[in-house]
Length: 153
Image 1 (cartoon, one colour):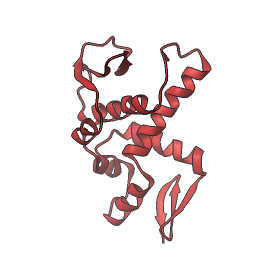
Image 2: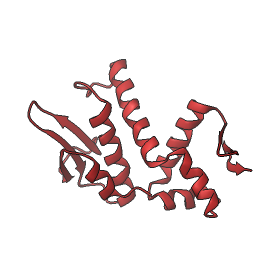
Image 3: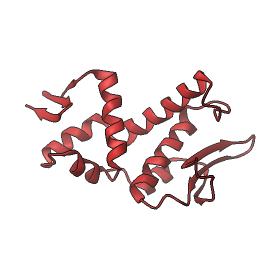
Image 4: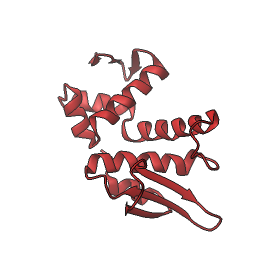
């Protein structure tokens, strides 16, 4: 499982993880000519949610170009989605589904607990994988079914 601190240690940006952001923002990535910042809202109290938000903001650090605040612009929406996908692949790699199966995890609640993420984030990640791969994925001589979530040998 990737921890919040693991994520923090992967990036070379200033981090304020108790930022006083407007309520519509859970997190924010901001880049100036000389500095890069990630801010996480102080109003997020769940450590799982903080980790998920940080991962998405790191996705912006790696993948986003320019000002994408206006989400009515299709290109901005696409960049937002790319950052989210980066976070899904970082925190919920397909290999983690097999690891969970091997460790006896049998439902989404246990899986999200194992990964230290919110159930909503897990659901969104699995939906992303369904859109990317279809209803199943073959990996390590096993078939991972994404809906319902299951592994067959």
